[in-house]
Each structure stands twice: as structure tokens, then as C-alpha cells.
Image (cartoon, rainbow, N blue to C red; front, side, top):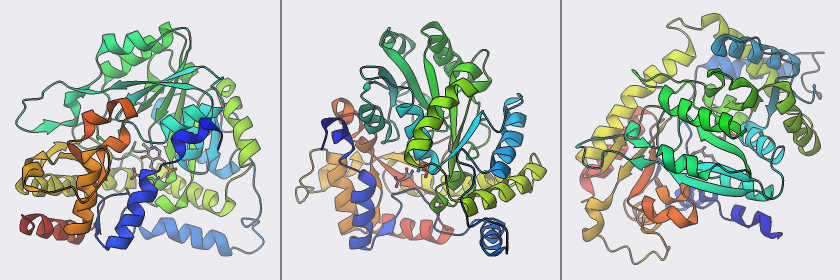
Length: 413
Ligand code: PMP
Ligand code: GLN
């Protein structure tokens, strides 16, 4: 294996999805809903796949099916208050993964540096290294370590530390808001601080906003592309899997100015050429339906977070009652919790992993049949020790599933 791919050899998703199957545990690990979203989205797909003489089962336009890029342009033009050109400023991809890959691969020269904020969605590091880039990591720091309840907004970047990472080799910074795994939503001041550094050093911003509709009151999601003079240096990434709660659709997109999108298009055209037509046509119909409802109480983009906020509060309570110290998120569908209250009572020596959060999460799956994801999976090797006290749970689950988690957590100690 060429050494530039080595950072991608291990995948926490492969290991822990397999473990969930073999241990038959209650799976709050990998992020996906365990129930159906509104049936209209899958109905569209069924209709599209069986429409006669429609050509929806044949290839479509390489950079994105026309009806879908048009719907995405309509939606984001409204959201960012700028007219987006569907043919040159949007590209459709195989999930947000491919959009990230194209954005990174299409812009990094060997030796370029990419700033990654920790914790980070785990694929960012191998994607940068595969492109021959050098990741420069900066952890979010807990500004209120003594707070009685912890909140994702307590975790902040140190502005001087961030500024010190920028230099003449810095090509890009990756931000993720709402954030996986922490649930943080970067506020206006934080985004302005990042934007000012990006402008000062002529750096590209890749903004992973796959959880843009998973935002809990009273927090609001701000798109960094809307900040002054940021459109021209930002590539924003979204996901139909997250937007419509159908992670198996694996459809994503990137939007930004055409001169930046050109580079992504080259990578996409070489590796993928075109995404599944049926899923794109169904997603287009889904978006058209939702665009008409935007801002109304029936909009899925609104009902989704209304539906999840009580689940989030419920998980927070059961974790707290169960002896964990959870961190209240502002967005996304994950929650981090400190598990170290149990450390002295448990013998984790049956597990051999280097980091104790991995040992604890495996022990939990095997012995009490509940699965989370070890938090250090979202940190670079040099900083994993900062994360060992935590694990991540997903709360996009049936109430019944969360109730089962409560039963497990109230009876195991
Ligand atoms: N970015 C983040 C932050 C994610 O959590 C995910 C989750 N899968 C992705 C990107 C990839 O999304 P997709 O499934 O659309 O490829
Ligand atoms: N994004 C999902 C999560 O964070 C997992 C994606 C994957 O399995 N690679 O749980």
C-alpha cells in the first residue's frame, strides 16, 4: 500500500458496525435513524424507478442531474441570499464523503497544509494525506471545565493558537458545523474569526454542513459562505442522507464559486463520472416539495429537529441518571458523554486497545449490550489522550430504542 494511504487503513465504522452485529447489542454507535422518515421521499424513489420511458434508469449529466442541481440552486440561493448557477456552482456526489474527497483532492498540492479542528469527522485526515497534504490539528478546548452541566458551546478554538497554524503552505481549513461528534454549532463570532484568518492568508474553507437541518432551539446555523467576502473562498458540502434521514441514499453535493468547483469536477469526472439517476431524480422531487414548504411548520427541515430535540433531552437525562456526564449538543444527532465515573469499578483488561475509551466501548458492547463510538476515533494520534474519557452516542432512534437504553443503563451497575 502506498504510504500516503496508511492513515485510511483503520476505520472505526467498520470495526464497530461489525462489533454491533456480533454482540447483538443495542446500537447507538454509527449514526443512522432506526425508523423511516416521511414516506414521500421513498415513494418518489419508487415512482422514479418504475416510470416508463423516463430514462431515469439510464445515465444522467455527470456533474449532477439537471432537475436536482436546479432544486439545490433554488434552495441554497434562498438560504445564502445569492443567485447560485446550477450548472457551474453545484456538483452532485456520492454522499458528502465524495464531495469532501473531491474538495480536498482537487485543491491540495503535495506538501500543502490543511487545518483540521479536533475532534473531527474521521475521514478528513486520510483524505488530506491521500492527496499528499499535511494535516495541522487544533483541538477545541473546554472553556468551562467546572460547569455542572456541560454544553457543546463551551468547547472553543483558541484564536491565537489557530492563528499560529496559518503560514505560506496553508491551503485550506476544514470546518464542520453543526459538528459531528460534539454537536457544536459555530457562532457568528467564531466563524468571523476563522473567516478573517482565511482571508488574511488567502486560504480555502471547506465547510461540511451535512447536519444543517439538525439544529436545536434556540441555536441557529450560520453558513460561513454568507460572511463578507467568503463566498469566493468557500466550498460548502451537504448530504441527502442527512437531509432526508436516509443515509443509504449516499447522495451529496458541494456548492461554491465556479472557479473553485472546476477542480472538484475534474476529480469527480475521473473517479465517478455520474451518480445514480434514480436517487438524484427522487431527491430533486423531495427538495421541490420541501422548498414549497420552507419556513412553514410542515417543512421536514423544521419537523426533523422538533422530533429529535426531545430524544436528545431524553438521552441526556438517561445518561446523567446512569452516572455519565453528557455534553448537551446544539445540533447534529450525536451526544458525547464522560464515562470515567465507572473507571474504578470496571476491569477493562479483557480488552487490549491502546486507548481506554476503545476498551470501555468494547467492554460495554460485549458485557452490557449497548454500543457507542470511542471519542478518540475523532482525534489525531498525537491528541487521542485528550478524548479518552468520552464516548459518543447517536440519539436518532425510536423512543422505544432509547427506552431500552435507559433500561440497560439503570440495571447494569
Ligand atoms: N460529514 C460528516 C460530519 C458526517 O457525519 C458524515 C456522515 N456520514 C459525512 C460527512 C458523510 O456523509 P454521507 O453519508 O452523505 O457521505
Ligand atoms: N457519519 C456516520 C457517523 O458519524 C457514519 C458514517 C460511516 O459509517 N462511515 O456515525
